[in-house]
Length: 127
Image (cartoon, rainbow, N blue to C red):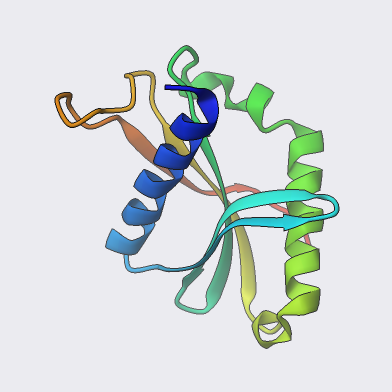
């Protein structure tokens, strides 16, 4: 499977994980001139911007390479862009999460489910 398809499948898994945890997914693949946020969800009174990493060859310890300070800056700027256009969320707390889809290959109908880890408040910033 090519990386774009793997990324979309990973985002679907992540969205289901968040919904099972009681969150409401509001948007996926939200784009701004500064970047993209994979998922935006509401967790009670908190608006959650979620980066999804689907990696077969790297482990969770390597997340600092995939979500470095520059990537965090782009996600934060995209969150600000979202909030500017969706003012009804401006009074909510903000959180930046990461959902990691583990080393095992993403499943086809004949394979087992992947390892998924949800890292709440993976990084912080005042928005």
